[in-house]
Length: 420
Ligand SMILES: [Zn+2]
Image (cartoon, rainbow, N blue to C red; front, side):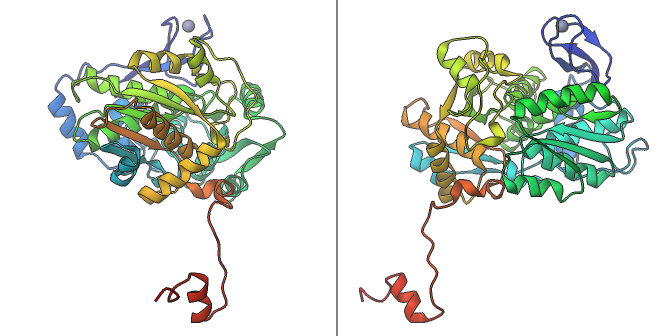
């Protein structure tokens, strides 16, 4: 396999492929580093990918496992777990028309097993955790990650601990507990939950905290979004991608995925322009972008977009740098715009997104309204989670009419037959 070592993103110090996540020298984050020397022929690599199974392991050459992907035939990790990824990229012509654009695509990651993109990162982290011999999975979650960890742990037969803020949407709480996980509801914000989990992970070094001590492996799973988009666009990159921002990891890994494929000649041209999307009620990265700052000021979240409610985003500085270098931006939209975004997407594409997708849709609408996008550009809108997870966001947004079970009542209520 191509993964070689972990490397500090800040000082370049190198580390072995273990459950490590922070540089001992400078406290910078560690990232997986690959040797692609054997992948010098892009045609051969492309054929290899096209012949592989249609899930995230299609891109195993770019994921941080030391052995082959999990599944039958792999003696170390024979259980494949939930099949994840290879979600649809849908042309959204009706949405494009509404926005005055011509080439809008929706990457629909609600089509994953627990209905969010987090299944990708958990698939990779849990496979690496099994390679390293861990027997329990754990995470600090704003909701979607908890769903994914609990389900994947159930599928592969590991115990799991999911830590969430106690005020989470009920749908996300129930859709985690059902898998038989140890659900820990913490009275505090996500940032409190994350700090607590960092402390607990130091005590329980036999637990794989997917987004803490397994973070360098976990985060690599997000690159598969970029790979799939490129493959689904006939091995080309789009001109722009709109990405919701919580910790910022997804944003930075989409950029990294595009860059890796450009460097290997799998795709040609330029990296996409990247736009980050936040809610004004939790916009540390958008605020820093607007202020021209290189670092984020932590905020206390207050927004309906709870899956994005990280007040102190770990990858904020990297997002700021990438957004600026790509010619993009980081934008924030109000809770009302988020609700409108959910409605706009649902009514023009048939895709029901949770609040995070309402954020990215509203940001795309705002960029289009402002004239920031050339109408001929190919724009990908990333929809990271399903609307059934955040039903309160659409409560009261449309008229509900209960009628008596008679034809007259129906025709009267809907004013049918009256005009005739
Ligand atoms: Zn370092």
